[in-house]
Amino acid sequence: MMEDRQTEDFSLIHAINAKYSDEDNTSDFKVYISSNAPGKKDSGGLVIPPILVLDNNRVTCAGPSDAIASLCCRVTELDITNNLFTCWKEVLSMITHIPRLQTLNLTSNTLTAGSLGPDVETLTFPNVNLLILNNTQTTWSSMHTLLKIFPSLSELHLSLNGYASIDVENLETYPSLKKLFINKHAVPRWSKISRLGCVFPNLETLVTIESDLADMISECSEAASVFQCLKCLHISSSKLPNWEHIEELRKIPKLCDIRMKNIPFLEEYNEKVRRQMIIARLPNITHLNVSPINQQEREDAERAFIRFYMDKENPPRRYHELEQTYGKLDHLVDLDLSPKTTCRLIVKMNDDDDDDDGGKSKEMDISITQTVRELKQFLQEFAGLPSHKFRLFYTGIVDEEKINPQELIYPNKFLHTLNISDGDWLVIIPKLF
Image (tube, rainbow, N blue to C red; front, side, top):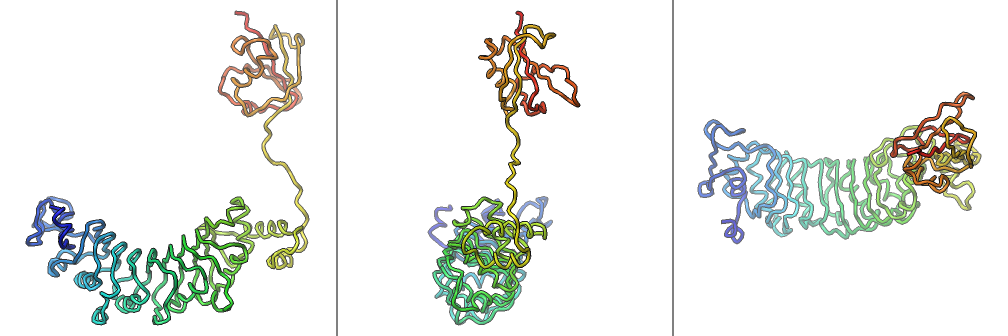
């Protein structure tokens, strides 16, 4: 049955029936389900949920308008990702009969620009505030019409549409948009991307990741400041080449939340240094990669920045700004705070565990990161016995008094758990059987 549908129109109503009905009711488009099924009317009629997801169903068209109006009267979110819609008029005709619709996801439906004729501009959908057009081949000329049809969008997704330029000169100002996602594009210069700020003057969040963005510097002084309301910018996996381009982010007036990961030149630094360098260079940000920046972290980062460049020729301009704030700083003392891994112990061989004065002894550097089993194997040569032929005792000094010997009987116990110190003893006693 499905193979036949692949070669003919398969409507939204067909998809609803296929997903929610156990019967083939596609001829009259009325769905009946057992009256005791959850979420169904007493009559057995289907109640479509407010969030309707019909992705990957090979849907090509809307279907009868009366059926859509009846079944989708409660729908507020429609996800028809990866279907076979090609005509905007068909999509708009469909959602005309979904009066409560607020979110429309058309991802991976190839919608032709030519299907947006002048007659569709008479339609408006003021309730829709989220429109997702990823991988739909939506052109900038199409956006001229779409922004009129959807006059109240607060969030818009335009990723994977193959943009190599931002051709928005003919678009009218659109003040309602707050969030814009335009990922995986081929626009290399921020001066071009900043054109979006003229169309969306109240934009607060711009997400442009996995892109060809490689140049934040512009000869036009207004390129960075055109985003007058932008607070959050996500530029991970871009191609910015050096710190000079990162510092341009200071020019965005209200920018306070930056997300930047997987930028090649930044990966040359370890995570701590990378974070400190970004914080120190961008005094305007309060959040970096989602984490908030408190005052103590900022001061530590800025001081570390000064010390990083204090002995280098031609330090960046930010270095001189911070030096005016903190003055000349001393070099930090290079302390090795890494945990101790070895202790110098006295190893004694004794034939009598009550006589600590007999037998040979030797000072050895013993790794305390090893287990008792590994230590006994290490001491076999000194003892002249295989590890299973001797017992091993540990003793040391606590409060200037020698503690009673403790036999090391647990083979998987790590030596560092014994609080071993330099000058303590290990006593080897051969087994008599």
